[in-house]
Image (cartoon, rainbow, N blue to C red):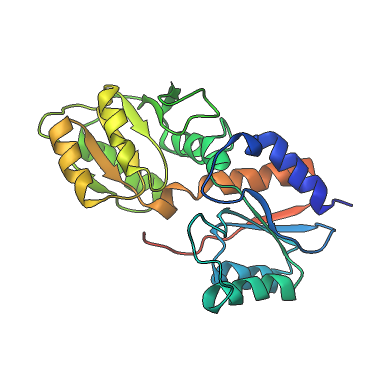
Length: 253
């Protein structure tokens, strides 16, 4: 029998979760039944994912985006009440890892994105591999901005928004950070990257890219962060006697 405590302990150890200063509480956010046989994973612990967990009779929901974010209202009303009520009513555990799952050297979002896009990983620009969030490397061959955008769109099944810089040319060195890391474009440009990939774009990002001489691709927050939680779920299924299923709740953002 696999217990919730065993799963949480394994994740905490593998992801070194306690070493990250984050905007949320990493780990077990909502406690449920002690015995774990089925783990349902997804990017965000939205109501649609919770409903899938109930229908599948999951014992645990594993996500990248959980609850209890810094500076969010603490009142348990409305949408928050409904989500928590679903978990508590059905005795389902909610396990969430944010920055630790972005950074992990093999299971993390940045690692899995690089693998999916076929990038050679050189390291991180903001720390050791496995701790840093801004990764860099190179494509298998030099690419034009249009070729890179087409490749990313095909591999992620989502057309990215491409901002080309008139000062930048062929892409040989790429930096990336999944999710809402568009402001890391400054550090990427200063480090000499020809292109930077993240999930989202802000109004200022266009000007930064054009004026700092770096191409930018906004490939989708959800689309760039689908793969880490899948890898973690599969890792747990291989290490414990549990069944894992990933559910991709459509999100164009």
